[in-house]
View 1 (spheres, one colour):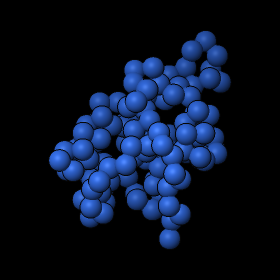
View 2 (cartoon, rainbow, N blue to C red):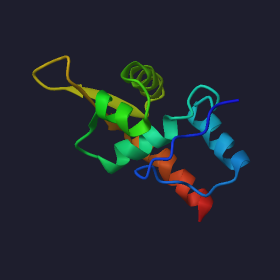
View 3 (cartoon, rainbow, N blue to C red):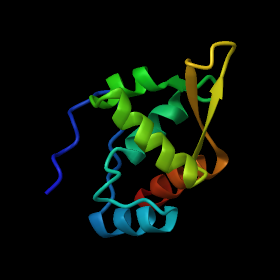
Length: 113
């Protein structure tokens, strides 16, 4: 059984029933057992849009390790929900939400209305 999400005031809680949530995750291609931080990560990226968030900052916001965020970003990027950008220093990477990620969050909010 996955551990509950950390109590983080920056994460917006979505009042949606579990079945609807799982259905939307499946439509987006997210596996609920492996990607429990996918939606909270997208919420943080939406809040920082269009500036983006570094992997280390997102890790701190989600209370997970930076390598865990890198793996999560790989999955979300593979699903076309986010993209990476780098400045002059290729070691510094920012994550940005894509239109498909914004659409997924909008669908979650629409389901709760």
